Each structure stands twice: as structure tokens, then as C-alpha cells.
Length: 298
Image (cartoon, rainbow, N blue to C red; front, side, top):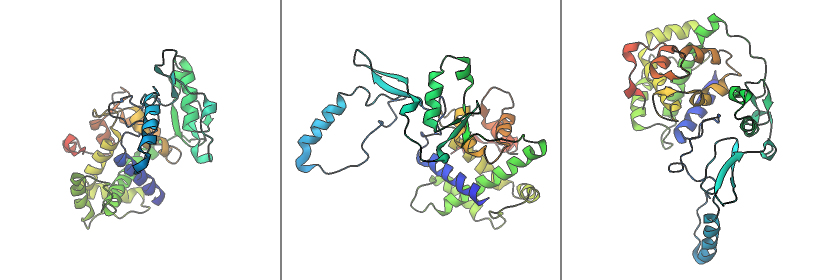
């Protein structure tokens, strides 16, 4: 349980700190050079002083590189054509950085383990336009392994744990948010009420029976956390719907540890349109229709 809270905390912090950097998927990178920061920009700012002339020379060199501000989606890299114009081409998997360990491996829906997400997306790019490439997606983080089937009884327990995790993640963010800006002021006001409620169930390894009773008893504590998580995922674009790509930051790390993850999210898509609307998302977590409020997605 503690490991899950830590995982969701890291995930939430990352989403708040840099919502544009979702977990890689085949369409996750929105090629919008008007808003995205230049790739390769020097993060170190120094006082150049007497070295101004040298800095100007560097800037001229950068300006002459057509690929400097040309962004390609995952699996592709920028190259210059015969007219000195930038274009995106499939990356050679062999050019991907060497991996440091097993934790960088990913599993594709072809049940094949790839050395890293770079190797996966580079391989997928080479299959563009083929039936195999169309069906290939990043399934989960880590080497491929046997994922047992999710039983109906297990599926009914999944949202109980997820709701509790989301609530505890928000509380932890609130407690650590003095100078970190992990939450907005509006979010802090919502979480403060939960944090100060003496009836709140403390974090721990609870039975599903206790989690179910707590949800019924303290139902109002769970309404905002469910809305909050939807808002963290709904980023590319912000349209009130979660795509396969937007779900990836939550789904891909969960699958190896929670084997009901895939079935749960499939069940949430009530109309089978490949997107999960806010109403579908909230309903999956047991939030009543009258309590679903777009204004809580803050």
C-alpha cells in the first residue's frame, strides 16, 4: 500500500509539474512548436561577461540548424532534406541510448519486451501503415510477464483501492506543499477540508470491506480526488475526454501490479467509443450522477 501511495504521489507530482510530458504513447506528443519548449535548450544560465562574442557565435550556429526548433513525435527524429528543410523520419532503434537496467524495459501489446520506450516507438514507427503497426501499442512498464485474468470479484474491488489511493495522494501532496507548489490554491482549499476531517480513514493496508464502509460513510471525501485525477490525465488536449494516450501515465505503470487495470478502464468506456468522458470516469469510481461537476476538475 505504501508503495502504491508513493507511486501515485510521484505520478501526481509529475503531472502537476509538467503536464505536457505525459508517458510516451504513439500519439501523445502534440507537435505544437508555438507552446512547447525547444528541445535541447541549455538549462544552465551563466553570466557571459567578456565572453559575449563567443556566445553570439554559438547562437548563429544554432540558428542555422533547421532541426533546432522542429519537433517530432516519439519514434521519429529530425533530419534535413536536400532543400535544407527539416523533416521527421523514423528513428533507427539501434540509435536509442543504452539502457541502465531492467526498469527501463517496456512491454508492447505484441507481448514483446523492448529495451526502452525509445526502442519501442522507433520500432513502431518503422511499421507505420501496416496492420501490425496499427495494432501495436505500449502495454505496460517493465518486461513482459504473465498477467492473470481479472475475475468479476476482483474487478469490483479495484475502484475501492483506487479511490483510497487518490485520496491519500492528495493528502500527502497537501502536507508537503509548503513551498513546492504541488497543488493550486483552489486545490488546497478542497483538500484542506479532507485533511482536517477527523473521520478520515488513515492510509494503510485496509480490507476491501473497510474501504467499502468508509466510502459509504465518508462519501463526500472521495468526490474531489476522483475529479482531480481526471483533470491530471486530461491534458492532450483538455477536452473532457480521456484517450488511450492520456490514460497511459496511470495505466502503464499500474498493470504489472494491478492485473485488473486494463479491464477496469475498458469497462469505464460505457459507449465503447475509445474515450472515457468525465461522467463515465466518475461513475466507474462510484460517484453519483448529481455529484459529477466539471467545475471540480481544477
